[in-house]
Each structure stands twice: as structure tokens, then as C-alpha cells.
Image 1 (cartoon, one colour):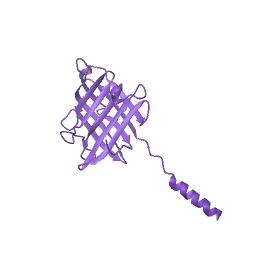
Image 2: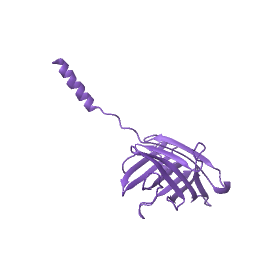
Image 3: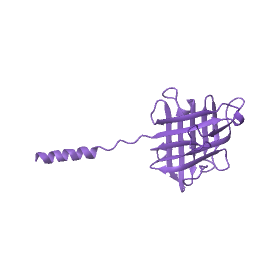
Image 4: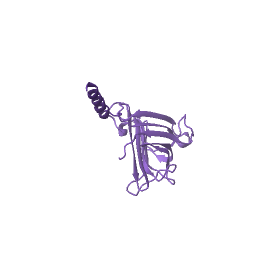
Length: 191
């Protein structure tokens, strides 16, 4: 009788326990600069998990209209509690993915796909994504609520006075120097 009580206790304990949820994580590496070396080229490499005091990271991946709405944000923070808008460097991307291997684009005229980039003292607030736009964001892999891909932008105008034309390409360790790279895991299903 005593053994059956222990079996019941262990069964109840086992059913009450489950795996801890895996944290949302992200990493991105890219370099920004200006054509004709009109400004310094700066490499960026950020990595973190949601809740980090030094990295603002968020992502979502949700099915819509035969494809996926994709969003990610990653930024370096000087102090805990800052946001992307207060960061010294960061990258934010949103758009519609028709199929793996294709470029992000706008979902509709109301839901415009775009890239925001922040550097040391400057920001590009909106650069449109898509085959005929300044920014090209390709999702090369969708897997278990996450994604990986590449980003490149040419002809973006920053908010400096006077404004500079900027680009985003691959960082120093990029597989292809023409493309920045990113990987996000355990993204939310909505935004």
C-alpha cells in the first residue's frame, strides 16, 4: 500500500512539472556606411535574450494570407530600461514573407514593410523593403517559431544634418559581404 502512495505522488509531481519555456533570442550582425566612404563604416554585432538589461530583443512570426508576417528588433542598450528609440545601435525589420527564400515586402498599403536602423548618433526611420525598394530582407529559414535571413540596404537617408545616404551590408565575419545576417528563435505568434 505504501508503494502505491509513492507511485501516485511521483506521478502527480511528474504531471505538474513541465519543461521551462525556451527564451526568445536574437542575434544580428551587419555593417553600415556611406557610399564613396563619405562616412565611417561601422560593424555591429548584437546578441541577446528577451529580458536582457543590455540588449532589447523582440520578434514575432505569424501566418497571414498564405505567408507570414515577420517582425524583429534588436538594439544595444546603455542602461536597463531603455528602448530601441534610445539605443545607440539597432536594427528593426517588419514585412510580409510570401514564401521561404523570397524577400519581405509590404502586406498592404496600410501594413508597409520597412527597415529602421540606428547608429552612433543617427537613425534611418523608414526604408521600404521589397524587390524594387532600398532594402532587401530575405528569410532563408523558418523553424519552430523562429527564422534566419539576410539584410542589405542601399540609398537610405538618415536624420543627420545634413542627411547622409547610408547602406547596410555584411559585417566583418559575414558569409557574404553584401548581406548582414540575423537569427531569431522562439518568437511570439503575434505582434
